[in-house]
Image: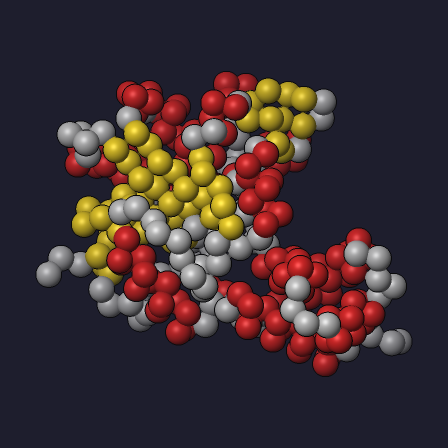
Length: 276
């Protein structure tokens, strides 16, 4: 049986992703190349994955190459993913922010791998639902992602029935979303509170304000060690002295950046810069 994609083509895609996004597709993740590249090739009008890769090889880097990289780097997401993290946000992190920032009444939060928007909306809904007093504060919530398509989806704030069933309680769904046919649209006044834009964590960063909370979840594991070190260093540069870094459940700064310390909270861990 002829393989659907050759070893050489897989190697090309892995290298393309590594060069453009600094992400490493490990051997156990090779299935992603075939499972994602097949539908993508068909969608773009190519007869096979091999035809697509052949075209990529013969042309200079452009929009098609970027869309391929985006297809390879889109991560799983859902509303309130890893519930312990959001319990920590509600029970510890936000109450601390309220106390620390009570004079300025400002909170800055960055979600650095926002995918299709469920994570930043989950953060915002936690604030609106449990801390109504913060609605009068200046809350700046920035959501960024490598993928232009994922940024567009986040800005749109429209989700299918399967997506809203994953993590959203019926009361929260009915309070903050409106049903439109088979889909659910987040309220305009909620959607407009989040700034979505494209950003490559491994590339140039825009000027970001001093952050109280930085969420970089379930993406660091895909970067090589040097890239992780650079990202953590840059996060330290924008994190407020009282601020916290929130990673995915299986991720850590340990053995990567010794300037952070782990803080156990509600059965999970968050990180902050060590005091001198």
